[in-house]
Image (cartoon, one colour):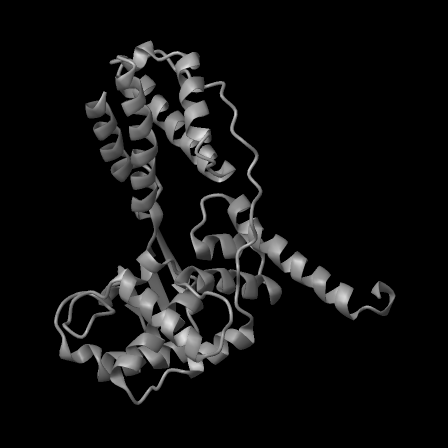
Length: 292
């Protein structure tokens, strides 16, 4: 049973649009269920019944997990059984009629435009290291990148003449993102004053010339957001959220934002529409004389 699970996880890396984190969390979720089955002396996925699944769900939910975590577990198990049914000759599917819990979609945190400007202004561009860091942060915000996307960028992904960035996102899907002249000027400075001293393909590199890590960017952004006096916990994905929200606030259409973010489903992008509407409601309730 464990061998089939390993095969499934390997197949995700090839065929699934999810990230490495998705594969790892699916593996953890399904492994717990497999261990439970083996403890019950069930050694074939063909022999698993709905009662077995319900028993495990009862144990799983007794740990006071969130609805979102429970729904992820069911999603992982459904995907796994589809794989077994399609590729491994398994005809049984005990999870097919199990319904997940309703998950309340939380609106993401964003920075105001003034917050973004305040954050960018704390970097000392006379320091080559801070020039690099400012270029990283502005690239994330200017192009709405995931953290893994910005650390994966190579030198040949940037077209300075046309001011576009080639990004390889989830599922190895490529998208082309335009950027504004201010970022172009910043990138040129970074290339000439910092990046020029190192070999290799990576666009953003550490002081040792190796590709910069996700953790290094997270730590740097956390430190700089405190310097900027921003009260909320600022992580790189907040800049991606802010990119989307600011575009919609200024008249961009939803389909364009979907394409720029690399979202497979429009419903994911629509979260930012709800965020914009929520902010408008708060403004009206605060400012309109009849709301008092």
